[in-house]
Image (spheres, rainbow, N blue to C red):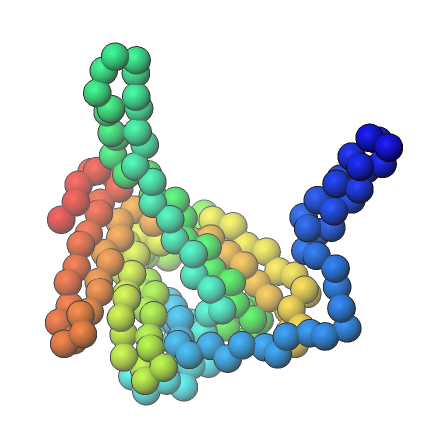
Length: 190
């Protein structure tokens, strides 16, 4: 009897971990109420948002920052400089995709006279097209690129952007911007 009880619990946990019992009902797709756009100089996107026409439309932009913390027995915690990870981008394949892939392949020559660095901008807009968050990336390169056909309507591409510096700008409810910058090489916050 004890073995059956453990088996039952194991099966229930397995079902929970797999996402539960599936029914024939599926949820309707959720409409996104904001826009995430990327501007890469000399690459035309398909955005039609006023003030951001021809920017590259994104499905997701994921950014993370970590401050390493070291705690040694009997002493105070020590922190290190922020560790900036790359920014991961996911988007549906469109007319800009070929140029984005080319930019990835050209990353080996980034900073050369034939491929000079130019700032890239990622902006998050509300449903009225007003910005509330903007990242400006210094000396960006696409360090990884992949494409998949898991999307329901069109293939998706995912790529990661590395950079040497970043400026984050936010706007308050009155539209007043506030910025902070971090130079990764110099390990300085401005």
